[in-house]
Image 1: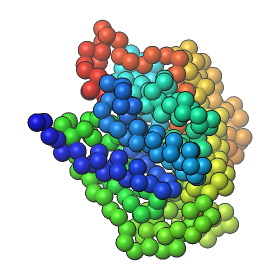
Image 2 (image 1 turned 180 degrees about the vertical axis):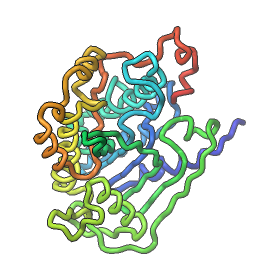
Image 3 (image 1 turned 60 degrees about the vertical axis):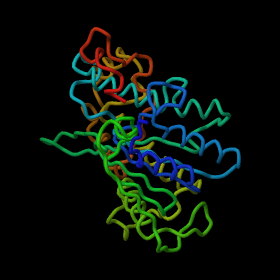
Length: 325
């Protein structure tokens, strides 16, 4: 029989299934479809889906945070002839997340969860600076392959969330699973909960980094990241910071990806319209000064009205689907 070594995949599934309060994921990809879809074989999305549905039925507070690149790191330009590979990966990410019936957010709605964002939300990271006295921005390319669960388990390694990394007979990967044995006092949804000294401190460090408070703990606006799942932190701090940052970046720079661009003709308009900083420099500067950290929302409807699969006549279109997934 064809037995394969897929212990990283198994560890992810087991840890997701056993999660009590939250799952925090940083990964370069999110390519995972339900079991009945033949395009992928890994079961990450199915495990997340089942765990969230279980939480919903039990009326539990349960959060999944996913941080990933705003765009895949492939050469070419979005909307251009050179962007075929870029489009293909973007297609598989969005098919897994938010676009089409097999996307996890749509499946959760089908299962009766009116607002899946109560349970799972997707984010990217972005930064800004000045070059020749003009404001500039660039996405921060998330290359980590990390999962932290309940402030007590960490999986960290080289495996992406896709079949290439997880099904055991494609790319070679390595990872470690670290379970805490020493705990500090923590809080989950307002109740005391043991926070692992390694997993808990790593999660808090990353949250502070993404929210822009790392190293600024003595300042007035120091945010308390102790309780990652409370309604206040999840909605009013984490999500709100990402949402405001996203709004400011889009106004000042017209940067991609964005939910306002759903077709290639929207993309052309977005290129042609002058961003705020060109005409209203001081107003743009005020907005940039208001940005906290690097956290932004992953736009779930970017190019949602276009087919991004490679044309059959292109080199990429002749490649097997498995190249991308």
